[in-house]
Image (tube, rainbow, N blue to C red):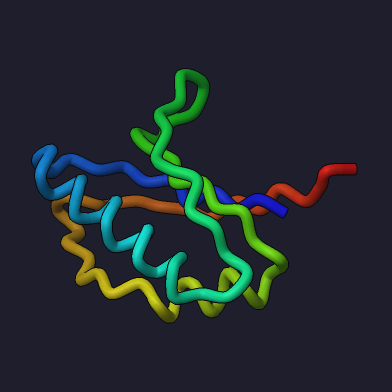
Length: 88
C-alpha cells in the first residue's frame, strides 16, 4: 500500500528540506514504512506530495507518531493524507 502526504508549503527551501528530513527519519523509526521521497504534482492543488510505502493503516498511524514536526500554519496551511491500496 502507498500513502501520500499532500502539503501546501510556502516556507523557504531550507525549511522544506527540514520537512524532508523529518519524514525520512520518521520512516526509519517506523517498522513497515519506507520513505520514497518528495514529489510535485501537475494535476492537484497541492505543492508537494511525500510518498511512503506502508504495510497498512496502522503503520501510517505509527509513522505519524514518529513525525517530530512543529507545524507552522503560516508556512504549511493545508495538508491531506491519501491511501493507495495495491497493487491489485
